[in-house]
Length: 591
Image (cartoon, rainbow, N blue to C red; front, side, top):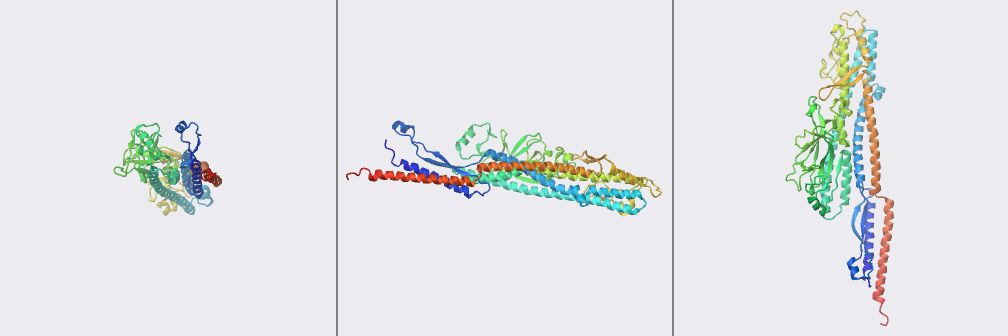
């Protein structure tokens, strides 16, 4: 059988085109070797078969030889499993790294070892006050020792005031950082939504949108450090699949009775009070997205009586009616779908969770976030430890603030009780709140030496006798004994108004115990932060082994494609020479 005249030429030409496409893709890869988030691309080739079975029936003797190669698409070399695992670990790393930063700030304020070395620790100053009391016990009639004791006591109150102020500064700074983070998250959400729309439009026209997808993946990686997210990629190019989804629900469809076009792409992973996982959409492919707002509130259930202002995130969905195109946003996993049109959700620390999936617009019900830097900020700003309603081992900044208050209140109460027993029960208060005359509002931030003691150093009662003979020191000895006690109950007030024993021990060991608690918490968080950081780095290395551009590999491929191009070109030249022989030199004998 005589073959088609230009068949070999077309076959060789397809090889040249394929090699050129591979070289173009290699150039794109090498050009973006330093581009953050870039995913290595490849040209997808498909061998072209012969004319098929009908040609064989028509020509039984025909040889079945392929007709070259077709470059039908370009694709990205990316592993979705690695992406999912990377974002999960990055969320955990974001949580522990942010929390570690907050605890390190707290440690700088409360680290008694470092402070004592500089002469500024409360524990050290308590021992100085104890020495002053012992001097008075040795010579009760010398008022100079009373003045020294008063000055040393004032130093303790000043240290407590300073530590309280510093902790409040840390709290305010963390809140400000949280606010900045929320702004970044909203920017990321909006950007991802815009990219989704652009990718949707591109793929509708058959464009692969690789570079747009790279940018979206890069933003999703960044978002995963802030929030626990689930990302569901949606393919817009297969209209047949869309038509099938409209009529045939399947088991993996989050809302099978809903329209195909509302499938969500990015959702927050949150939990209700029963620990049930709840996915709240951030971005859906219809162009709608939610907005996060950071605020404080004082009307949360058991927190009403305490009046504490707690941080919470409000996840708000705008009223979609008449906005843009497509349906509203929906809660995935619900059947029938729950519309999020105009809804608000409260996202708080784990210890504040109450109620089930909120579908009202008041924001009174809460869902919790347990990871990501958002989860860490909520824990740092809301973690009350034993003062809270749950999660007693969650030691945030508020816990350490309240522990300082407990110490100030207990120390003042014990010292005042002993001193008021002096002079036949007529002794004055030694420590008060900032009023100078009472203790009703006494906290670490406002404790001070009382006005009575400031006015007269002799207000420090040396004896319980109303008619002292001169050298009685029994009341001072009671104060000294107070420093030796190991069974002092340090009681605090819970957020619901109850009483909780925070520590039982000595006055001089309270801060050491608080430092141990902080040290253990910080050490645990630091260890987990290092672990998850290593996991993130390892998973990123795995991802790069698949999707990253390797210079050596690309150069080797370039040489291979160059040789393939040369070979196909040489084959084309050979075919041309053969045709020249047939056309110009065959059948010319005898002319």
